[in-house]
Structure formats: structure tokens, C-alpha cells
Length: 426
Image 1 (cartoon, rainbow, N blue to C red):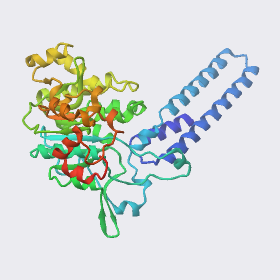
Image 2: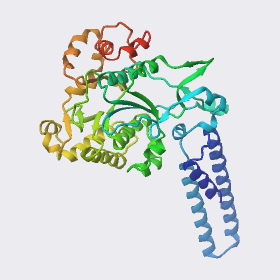
Image 3: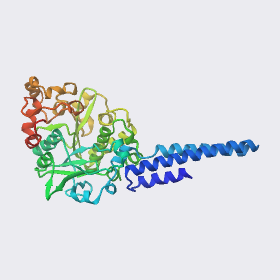
Image 4: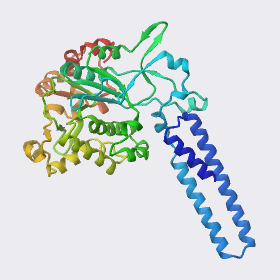
């Protein structure tokens, strides 16, 4: 009985009932406690009855009922939304009206105007989510709206894309439902200086996305709603991998990681391309698919590969691994050098060598920030469309304004507004 009751709660929650995280967790504990108590009661009852009943069929029936109940408990308790999943759900009911009225919401990418132009947009994704700590949850604290924030390097990536590609719209999509673009305080508008800097470009658009509605009507909808993604050991990275292929399936266009600096226009590059990181792997930090035809088919293949080969314990399996495997099928070879040299074999999908996007490999990421490597790094990336600074390794290394380094040089030329708004450290 309690298994059915709890299962019903889960189903209601999954189809959209907006229950705050603290109440869901309380319900979870109560539900599982009730089921354990009922299971224990059934076990004791069956033992008592077994002493007095000699009917073998009745004993088998009681054993069968106990097994069913235990299975129900396991299924029910394992299907509750994780804390990470709850973090990305709409939190509006948990936030006071006064707090909501003070904030200016981001428009949903599916509803807002302008919408992405098929094959003529550049996309960035921000997939972090602000979770309450265990102590805050114990205190009954509710989630609050957060003023939209970017790091200086994220703002630099966005600005450089907007600066060099004025005929493309730049869409920055945020998955955390608590983000708000600005806040009214004492009659004036409060906004992050970095957000203000990038919004100075008319082709930059900040949007929210709801993961559940965003996946609807796509080949990966059922898989996503099964919840496997939220059990990943590298959730935010794998969510970013998931979204880049989903966005390109929806709209086509160019996806870029937020740890790049665009150095020149990318508007006239082929409609379908990516870049090789090494002799054995492609990289998914730069992906361009046409909205229709071959490009759309590649995006669909990437979504299907993502769900078929998803591994939440492997950081690279679901990002670089996806585009590498799909390209191997398209090109009919596992040899990266053949993909680069013989463009015809890849049926219109261009694979660039490491030079245009990954001139500095990840093992040498420090070269971007070391003054003694300035001239050498500039020479190595002189023909690149962008640089990729490998945020997984470099994010904790801050540089002071005015430092002589390759990254500082690129920032000064390609994201001057973000650099000016960043403050002392960049």
C-alpha cells in the first residue's frame, strides 16, 4: 500500500508538481520509514502464521508477498530525485513574492525573442547550480534567487565571440533556475559589471533553459527523464556535454566552451566541423553543425551515442568521446590523420587539425599564463581561430591585471570590456 502511495508521489513530482527540496526529502524519509515498518510487520505476521499454518501454498504466498514488498521499497527509494536533480527544477514556489518581484528574470530560450537563427548562432552553456548545504536544509532554509554571475574568463569568451562575429547571435544559456539577470535595489538596477559589459554587444542574448522542457520532442527525451544523468560523478561536466549536442540538434550553429578566446571571425567556416585535439581524439569544445541535412543527422547521431554509451564515472566518455566515435563512423576510419587529410571521406564533415582550435595542448596549458612563454605561445597560435585555455586545469590560476602573458595579451585585444570590468585579477 505504502509502495503504491510513494510511487504515486514520485510520478506526480516528475511530471511537474513543484515541490521544494526540503519537503521532498521529508516525504522521502517518512515514506521509506513507513515501508520498512510495514515490511517488518508483514515479516513478523508471516512468521507467526507459519507456526500455525501447515498449508504449504499459504507459506509460499506469504513469502511471495514479502519479496514483492521488498522490491517495492528498493524501487521506490532508488527513484527519488537526487539533490542535484532537485537543484535544476523550478524553485518559484519556494521563493517569496517580494523576492521574486525585486528580480528581473531571464527569458526562456524556447519562448524569448529573438530566437536562435538556424545555423547562424553561437551558443555557450553555464551548467552550475546553487545547492543548499546540508546545514541550510536542516535549518529549513529555502532557495533564493541569485544575481547572474560570470567569471572574467567566461565573460571574455562571450565578448570575443560577439566582437568577431557581429552577424551571428550569441546565446548564453543558463540551467540554474535561480539565476536572475538583474535586481532592483532602492530604485536602481543592480547588475554584475561583467554582465553589463557583455550586454553592451547587441548580438548577445542571455537565456534560461528548463532541462525537462528543453529535451522534449528530441531523441534523448525519454533517456534524460529517466534520471541517469543526475547520478553522474561529473554531473556539471556531463550536463554540459549533454546540452551541447541537444542545442545543436535543436538549432544547429556553433557551440563553444566558455574557456576559449575567439581571435577572428568564424562566420565563413564550413557548415559542419570540429577539431582534433590529438592524433587519437577529437575535442568537443568547438562544434559546428548545420541546422538541416548532414549537420542535423550528425547532431542526432551524437545524441544517440551519448545515451547508448553514457558512463557517469568517466569524465571524457560523454563529450570528446561522443564526437570521436560519431566521426569514426561517418568517416569510416579510426585514424584521425585520415579524417583531416581526406575531407571527402567524411561526407561533408570537416575535421580540422589541432592548429585552428587547440594549438596549445592541455599538458602545456600553463604556457598561456607564463611570461617567459609569451612569444612562443603567440607564435604557435598565430593562425588559430581561437585559443582554448583548458579550464579544468587553469581555472584556479588567476593572473593580475597588467601581467605579461599570452592570455593577458589575447584578453586585451579580444575582450577589452570584460577585462576592464574584471577588477584586479582576471
